[in-house]
View 1 (cartoon, one colour):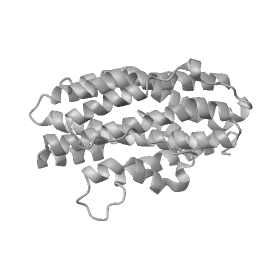
View 2: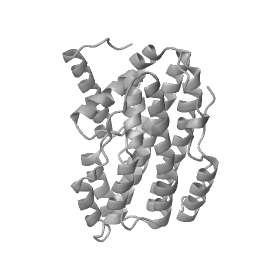
View 3: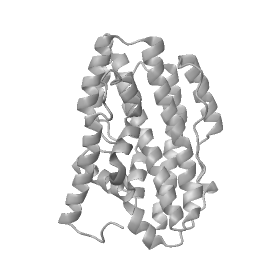
Amino acid sequence: MTQMHAPARPGRATQEGLRRFVERFAEEHPPLTLAAADLTIHDPAEVRRRYGGVFNYLTRVELEVERNVLELRALMPDATEVDRFFYHDVWSPQELQHGILLDAVQQGFGLEPEATDLRLSAKMRLVGVLSHLPGMLGVIRLLYYLTGAATERSAVIAYSRLVDGLQDMGERAIAETVIAPIKRQEPGHFAFYRLSAEALIGEEGLKDWQLQLARILRRRSFGLVGVNNRKQQADFGDVARALDFDRDLLEVARQVSRVERELLWSKEQGLDVPAYILAALRDAIELSVVREELSPSEGRP
C-alpha cells in the first residue's frame, strides 16, 4: 500500500509558519463528500461481524466534533487566531464529513449509529475560567496540542489497519473511497498539533513551572480518544482488539506518545513510553476481554 504523507512541514515552528501550513492544508484537503464515495459492500454480514464495533465507535467520535468545538471555545476563550482558524474552519468540517461517511458505511451493513453526546461538561467550563489566570493559557494550549497529537496519531493507526483489513476481505470500494481518503487527512491534523506544540515551547516560550504543571496534569487527565465512561473504555478495547493493537501494544503506545515524549519527558533518560498511556491502553483491552467473557458473542476473528 502506498504510504500517504502529510503536507510538508514549514521550515520553522512559528505562528506565521503555522498559518501558512493550515491554509495550504485546507486548500489541498477540502472536506470529503458522500457523492465521491463508493459504498458497495460485497459481504455486509462479515464486515459487520469483523468491524461493526470499529465503525460504530469511529462514527461516534467523528460526529462528536460539534461538542469538541464547544469544548475548545470554553477551554481557550483567548485562543490564537491560528488555533481558531484550524479547529473551526478546517478541522471541524473535515471531521464532520468523516463521521457522515463512516455512518453511511455502517448503515450499509445494517448498523445504526450510536447516540452522540454533544453536552459541554462543567469541568470544561471551569478550566476555561482558569485559563485567565497568569500563565495558565499556555499550559492549557500545550495540553490541547498534546491531546490532539495523540488522538490523531491513534486515528492514523486505526484507519491504516482498517484499510488493510477491508482490502484483505475484498471490500476495496469502501476501503479505497471512504477509509483511505479519511486516513489521508489525519496526518495533517497530527502535524498541526505537533508544530503548534513546538512553536509554543520554542517560539513563544513556557516557563519551567508551566512545563512541570503540564506534566502533572497530563499524567492525571490522559484519556483515550472517545472515552468518557467505563462502557466507552471497553468499547475502545473492542476496537483495539479488532484492529490488533493488543498484538503490538508497546509500538502503538510509542507512536501515540511520540510528541509528548519529545516535549515533556525528553529529560527522563530511558523513558520509552509514558506509563499512563500504556496503562490506559491495557486497561481498555482488559475491560473488553472481561466484558466478552461475561457476555460471549461470536468471538474475535
